[in-house]
Length: 388
Image 1 (tube, rainbow, N blue to C red):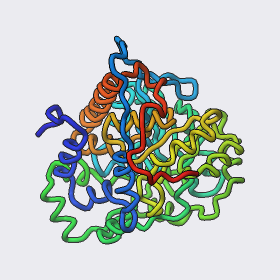
Image 2 (image 1 turned 135 degrees about the vertical axis):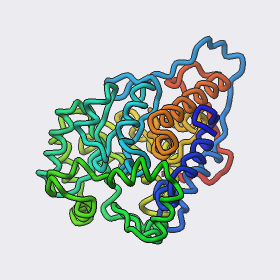
Image 3 (image 1 turned 180 degrees about the vertical axis):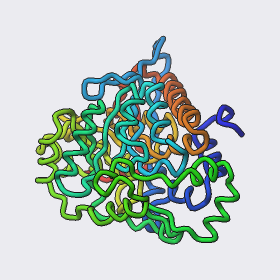
Image 4 (image 1 turned 180 degrees about the horizontal axis):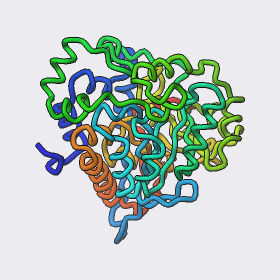
């Protein structure tokens, strides 16, 4: 199967699996510990049923959305993901360009393999920058200065990684922010010649944004050591306030999972939040993100722009999140499957599929605008929803 023949995101996931060595695919696909939260993110979509209105009389479906004063044509963000260069050379650039062409916002990760400046110059659409608060405040300030200078308009601060999650697949594979070369790794690479020639033999991708804080010729192992050494398990709301003061534009806090923290985000000056459990890759056993959308949006949605991530694979998934109160969704693995399977063309195909599916679901639901979606368009099919 080629990219154009794929009819859904899972088709493209299977293509990505066939084109990546197992150790790399398991890094993309895996979660923490028993992967209960990873599975729960997807299973939660099955707990919500859509409630259509027939003969609604809509001639067109409006899906454009305002995000912090900028209009996007579809209520989704290609979210911040790190180490993308191990899936496809210059994957960050490919993702940014695919998002821009599809009219979506794109968020670049601190841990990108293409630099802030490279992506800023290449991406002509709406672009955000995600900050991991590694190092000391001068490091944060410098990264934010570079992002502002490169045209990034919104800051996304990730707060749910004070220590690494216990990702047991990666531990078994001896995989962290660098790859330990074992005979098995070499053999697996040889069995995937497209990946071997396109990625590995051209040099292991580095975290380009961090070079100036290590040294210009730092290799991947030295940079990985920097990220391990300079995490902040003591990150506090005072630190978040400090970062808010450093950034003059829209400010989003990613990693919120309860009403109390959503209220605190509002109190420290956030403009938005991403309801996120880090794709099930940090603390296993926490609530699926979709389950927390309605209680959080009901509490703070009047004052904060609420986004949500976690396992979006179908247009119907996106519609359910919007109906529960999210303004937009953040896409992680889905566009990565695309870029791993076929570079920019693969990422574009994933976005095209999701846009087409969402449009179809909206028409069948009898709702003419994503802005009009509300809880009347969904119902819980089970009685296990946690109330905040």
